[in-house]
Amino acid sequence: MKKKIIASFFVVAALMLVVSQVSFAQDMEGKIGIGARVSYVNYSDDDLGYGIDADFDETAMYGGNLTFFVHNYLSLELSVDYVETDFDLEALGVSFNIGDLEQIPVLLSLRTHLSTNPKVSPYLTVGIGYYLNDFDVKSSIPAGYYLDPDDSFGFHLGGGIEYFFNEHFAFNFDFKYMWTNVDFDVSAPGYTTEEHKVDVDAFISGVGFKYYF
Image (cartoon, rainbow, N blue to C red; front, side, top):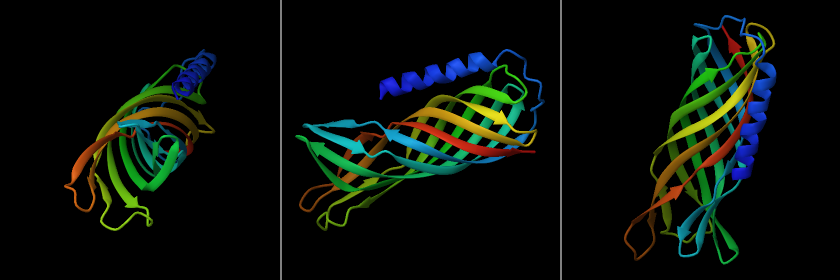
């Protein structure tokens, strides 16, 4: 996972160096963009102790976003996405699926755009997020067992590139790493409800299109 993150940062940094030879000629200040994006999500595993690991499957994420250019080199992006992934518990080499975790990440990102040519705008991003979490217990789990996740806060870092076909339409590629901890209320027959914290961190890379007006 760490190697993938480091490699992605180097790739984007190299692309930024290649395209950042001419100052940004297109005037973006005050423009608003509406977009849609599909992403690939690779979750990190979490050690829960007692030799048990929490393992989330790789999956796709879909969403929309709204961008506002405060300045030619500074923009804000509000995005809302939806992702669902299988939640497995692994111990002694045996993995068992206990259900599906659903998340709706609501992210606010600050994007710093680097000098580039009129059609290509590489950027770095940092932001915060609020995650609406829900869990669907697998039907094979005995009655009386449930997991109830709380909503959570988190933050993210990343970067990306926007390619402008014209003054209105742009293609976007970006990546980010998101950090968030989710508190699960775990209940079983004959036991009191306990709270367990699970790291639901993820590396995300996505592509999308935007319309600016």
